[in-house]
Image (cartoon, rainbow, N blue to C red):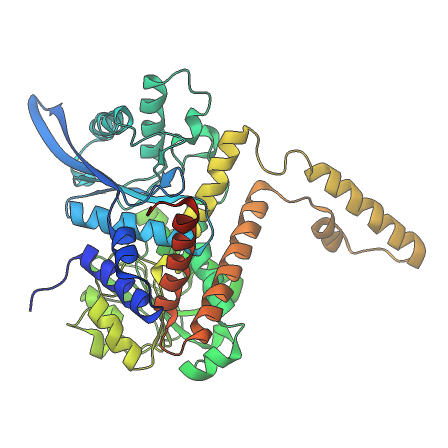
Length: 469
């Protein structure tokens, strides 16, 4: 049997949800199709030879502008992958109420094979081609980092756009995920991981869900396995370990996984990884080379945080977790998802779970357009107000507030505090919205409920604007 493509998996999830909520077929077909896709060839002279790289930028929806989505540099990427990821962005933004359409970019390249200077030329060339065709613009299409890209590439893309359009005062907003000194927002680098953690926290606020999956009432009493220790996996591990005292018993990487049934010291592992850029010789756990087996370990919560289609028909029946949390995009295939659902395993879907990055990217975009950082106007005012309140309490009670508590109460919110406060609020409200939708129809699971929420919002927008007439 031929394996479905990434895009076919996404479309299958959409079709499945649309049938349950009885969406008209013509409407769902319209929503599923990509609005536009551009293919480019980036030719760069490297070591006296012209090297050609094929790239894409897919726009799935422009119902809200700008369209938003990361740029992926990978030797394994394709147009199908790019369109699938663009579609996921449309549904993701709708679920978490971020006013963007969905888009995605990619370049077929292994960035590890090129020097920083070579990558800069390649990236700027790619960005220039996008900008000239309207696929890079603060008002139309705004990229962000993805696999194989980072803050560094975002600065190069921004600079390429600025050189083409020096009169655009909002050039900083043409891309998000930038360093703070180039208009980035504090907290963006760990936002996706924090959003995943907030999702798990919210799940544990609902005893009826824990009862169904037979999870222990406290998050810290459950055994967690995480596949991936990259940008998302690492920040997620740190948040779970330090904020929730979670017991993470295994962490997978591209070449194997670490396991310690007593729990891995994530702070020590993070320091080790920062120094060595790998996990395989870390002394705080046993390293096993069979990387794919990390998904099959006996645990309570499994978090795929690497890449797509890692849980498929090939291994789904060997998965032992009670709850799967999709930190990566598309880690569970359509057919595997149906089996997990029959087995009673809850799957918290990617189109909601990993939305933290685009949520805080939205805050960065708003910051760039407003030309002022969050908290600048009110932070000291709030601090002074709280100091006055504390002084009044101390004078009235004739008792002093401990210095550590005084500092905590009177400290004004930083930009990162505000970004993460908005992130928590968004993730919690979206989770509750999905849960309400799920509880209205016994045929809906978390994934189909999330898609149902997204589809209803998209249809409402299109119906009111009269797009079908």
